[in-house]
Image (cartoon, rainbow, N blue to C red; front, side, top):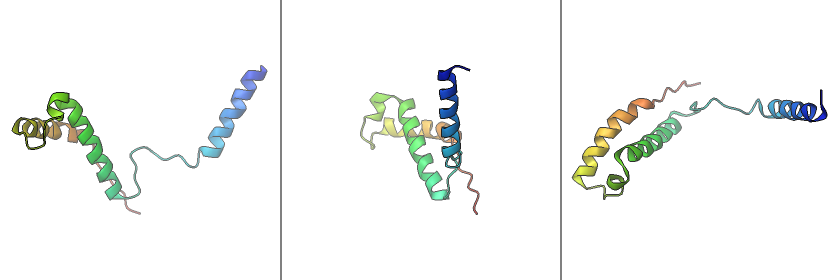
Length: 87
């Protein structure tokens, strides 16, 4: 084994060993309210991307923006869900 490969192996092992216990599964939240807040932010971001920049920058009371937002929100919100497993 070359010196560089040995160094990379040792550094990789050290990173895994020291941080392996701190890693958490993505989208697994300790509290249901955290999950709901993260879900709301993700849905809002994806909806704004989906309706386009022109409509997303319109005032919230614009009827066309409201209709596009509601339509996209129904479709996008199905991508995210919260399943909280209480302890």
